[in-house]
Image 1 (cartoon, rainbow, N blue to C red):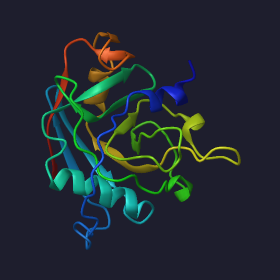
Image 2 (image 1 turned 45 degrees about the vertical axis):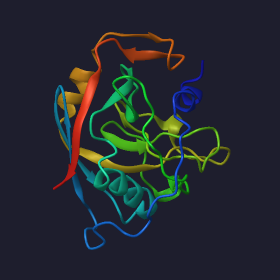
Image 3 (image 1 turned 90 degrees about the vertical axis):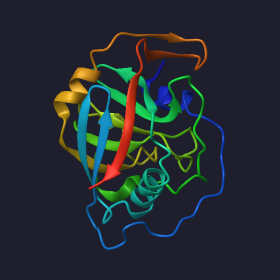
Length: 192
């Protein structure tokens, strides 16, 4: 199955209206610390190039939606995806969909963070992924909106590499492959 299509298969459906006021409006490049059960990942977000996406991500952080969630998809040499489920695969409450800012000049290169979405280019909500390699097939082109990159890993690529080696299996609950057998927990996400 096409890897791009796989990005759309394991996203949840619970949507709610959320506050869209700007979070930390004076911080153009907020740093976010993602504490996981396997170590910490420090990410710098780019509000200049992806203001809607960054603000959306910061709203989820501010409301503690990512606390005690999991990385529910791990594909070695491709992506690690999270931000949608807790460790019993219950979907987190999602905000309304956001506009796809993929034409912002940022590319799906190794060490970047981007938004997962359905086939509809403007369907991203809470789920995000880390690129474990350069993935130009996820970038926008004349025929495809692509997936919006909104930041990059500053520290913790070694943690992502460690996560990429966990054993995965098919999950009946998610109806998906590449689900870690032992959950990789996102303990907390905070803004530095």
